[in-house]
Length: 169
Image (tube, rainbow, N blue to C red):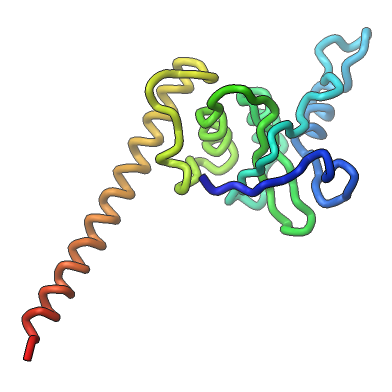
């Protein structure tokens, strides 16, 4: 899976990362208080596990950021040095590859190609049955594209190999 190690304990002290998922949740729901029990609590929307997964979309809308944060165990973060958005896990302790896949589907429109083999497919773990079905359908679509691309590449390799073997002196 295409990811980047990030020590969040150290990064909280720097200005390298913007916690856009957290900011979007606060903008949408407000901070938690007695007057706002549906607001965002102190730790919501912050990365917890020390990996960041790059998004391909370089302009993620507020609505999609909120959807990622509300529907998955992920948040969206922005790296000022890379000028790039990333996903990060806000929970841990179990296989959350389905959450990462769903977050990619929401933010990028498809699952990261490097991740196709890594998504847990035997049962829904941390997503609903409907979301699990959506993930499997997207995996099926993307894997069929990959298979077709590899078959085309293999055909060209075989043709070139035959051509070289036929030209033996």
